[in-house]
Length: 230
Image (cartoon, rainbow, N blue to C red; front, side, top):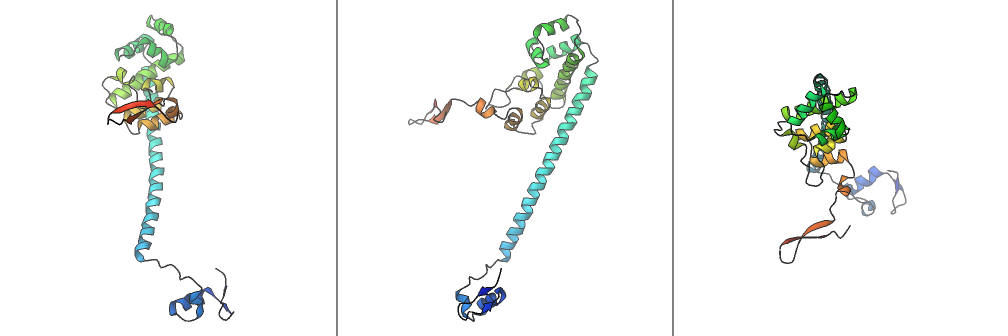
């Protein structure tokens, strides 16, 4: 704040003089200058609490992000270790494990990224490439974690259930997209289904948006009608 000119005597008066003049009621500058805002102790306390709460929210978010990242890293490392152990089995044994869990051959082929005839060859005892064999072992290891660590009783059936009513995306789709991390996140129930969908496909809401909307008709019953904004 700079100096202020008093209109009563045209002399130069400092801000401190103006405030003092307003407080004592002397001089004409009291009519020209608005009084300084009065901040009560209660307001000061609220401001301090708001600042502290904002700091704690930011700190909590950072801590939550760090913990989430650490948990994901640990889960993926566990998956890698289990996959290496499972890779000691033959292709036929791995396929039998997946079949016993309820997976169809076409689903196994889809999750592995190969054709159904290729899976049928492995069933007959033909060897898979090292990459495909590890992929099979990874599928079995992932199912082990879903069933053992996250208490999913029907693993094969669980993979076919949409993760949200808002979109027909299933854990099998996540796995086909090589998002084992999201499969484990969904199984752990640590994050919402919508957040998993966002991480899998940021355009999922528009992609799976219905052309119809539910509304309450004049008779009080619910009905469907085309969306007005489509």
